[in-house]
Image (cartoon, rainbow, N blue to C red; front, side, top):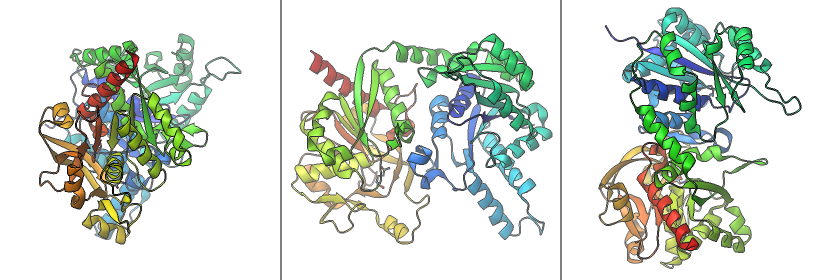
Length: 552
Ligand code: GLN
């Protein structure tokens, strides 16, 4: 008999942004540590078919899976915590579900029936969840439902949970991650919003099995009791989830409240002994907390501000990859967000970059802030400041080199000016056709591709191998027509596609610059706490060495 997968649904209460994704990932982690095979799944309530067309300032980072699917940033959390690679079957949006159902209807696959929102939409949701669980042979599938309970958008997904629970009550449980505010005027933790959230969940026919109580501080016994009584759960099933210094603390905190034992019991799974996974994790977390040597990294970009707030969500994988590298090197990475348009208004502001131990320019699109970024690259190159460019950050570094070393002062990417005299970065022919047809969704060069690495380069030394698979998301490429001249001028293309046509990494020899490297791909998507990405480690090491040099 095929094994019965168990399903844990994670929903949110009171408000968004309190850490459902980290909760989902952490539940996975503690179950993995009990020897279980775990997979994770994200449901987004948007009409967008995937996350690829969403603006990162509104929705946060677009996380690219190895198969090229453009998904939500939470998928990145799952991969980073669980060290598993997910695929397109592990992500869905309302738009993608409706699209499938409508296409099926058009193909007469419903045998002339009236196709209805209920049950056909939830049935499609259920079938996708089961397929993904089956494909990964998971003992436990954890499914995070985007949004918060009580809103209209995710109601059909909650209906799917209710239907699954009716079908096999012993295999399905629901966790609500809810917020317990401590209003400064009252000075006391208030549980009422959570009570309302649970009531809203009840009204969809679902009673939560576990309440994860997110709050500034750990919950006291009194609050636990109150939540238990008013929300009809046992006191033990109210899990305290206080604010943490590092998200990687969360699985360890959950175990303080014995969450893996509780989950195993509720799902009638055999409790296996802790298998050491969490020990290794705990060691890494200790390293994060004990690092005192600060390394200051400036991230130069444009998607930083929404109103008065800096929106770092747009670069979450980059931030995490830097933290992983910091943990590996034994330093505390301190980040600063630098708006590149500042350098366009006032060149003198570039001098500020001197105080950083390293500068990183992440991926990006369009023309705003680009000249400022190119100036920042030049400043780093000429002042020996470690520089790491990701995707656009690599393309702009190549443009900077073409302009200021090769002497092609008008070098540019055709993304900004189609008629530029020196299209050092140019669109790929098949991409031109996509743009002409306004065919924007899921049409970039996406997902993992192989890159071959040259010997005796920073890249080769960092990776310790000559071939890697890395994830991509771009339409433009270094123009092969300029490669020879750039090389003659001293730039090293240390990795290319296997046929040698596409440039994957550009760098300067270490004799010329301590660390100047850019990748056409996004290494940040493959970094995790226990497996930090080698290029991020090399960059943070270089930054830390600069700091030591300056201090000594
Ligand atoms: N805009 C560039 C391109 O499409 C870079 C994309 C990116 O940084 N992800 O090629």
